[in-house]
Length: 387
Image 1: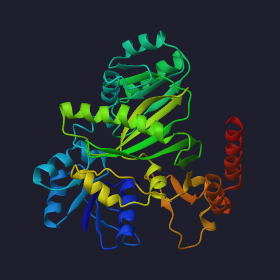
Image 2 (image 1 turned 120 degrees about the vertical axis):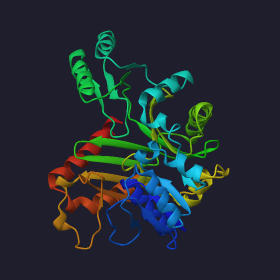
Image 3 (image 1 turned 90 degrees about the horizontal axis):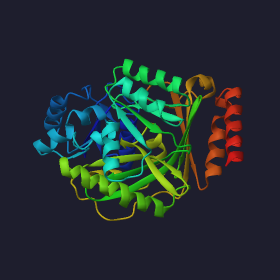
């Protein structure tokens, strides 16, 4: 099958490799100018916002299915154009995807639908934002609205610090900012696949970001199947129904950043697709036909069935390159790099989480600086004590 992935991010590369491993007969093209050493995909140097050139490439190269991982391509209407031309694609329409890259839109919709989200305010003027934080309880989260390039989000515990944070966001060219109450709880990230009508939970995972590394645990044992079903029925389906009131249906993967307090959940952010490193953790234990799922969703015909996973846990670490000793790797070792080229990503799977963690630590122990590895172990031990 001829497949085009519109994206140049890490998720696009991971998806291309995964689909090639599932079926070697697939010819996979990726809109990137970075070649792959093993030839698992064919790079095509087309900019992600050049939808006309992407469409021409699909026509003249007999592309049978397109998957968009690029938010730039989605915002520029790749799904809208390809549907109009009669081509199959797995991606949301530009209008329906607004809830995943405009925080103000997502917050307003959640407020309207009575979906639990932290108390918030949306501001387009500094003085109004200052009045709000002057009367608020701390800590507060202050973040940008348009997140297509990057999410700028920071927690502030005093008025003066929050005021400087607001000034910085407006100075950086943000037209709107969002201020919300801080919830002191570790986030859980939950991902769903949808055809706009039906939806499946894909995975719930934990992500911890520390100085020098990011840790991903999948699946999360802190979220029960019943809780995920509740979120599916009380969050995902109401969102999908609301989107259809003003736009075409949302087709694709939708992610939620959630926090849990006293058996209640709060939705903080919405994502189109997987966040950095989460996709790697998911793919390492997913044992189903992902391409068929995407094709079915793209054709608005997602069937009602259970998804297949390996009976394993995944433990993933994204480690800053400054903590890695490259000379200790074998010469032909292919390391997975983050998009910004700042981190190397390592993953291990096993039947228990502790075993997966042990395998990974054994793998990287002599490949990291001693100081970093010891800090990694100490961080784990402290978290276990706090739990």
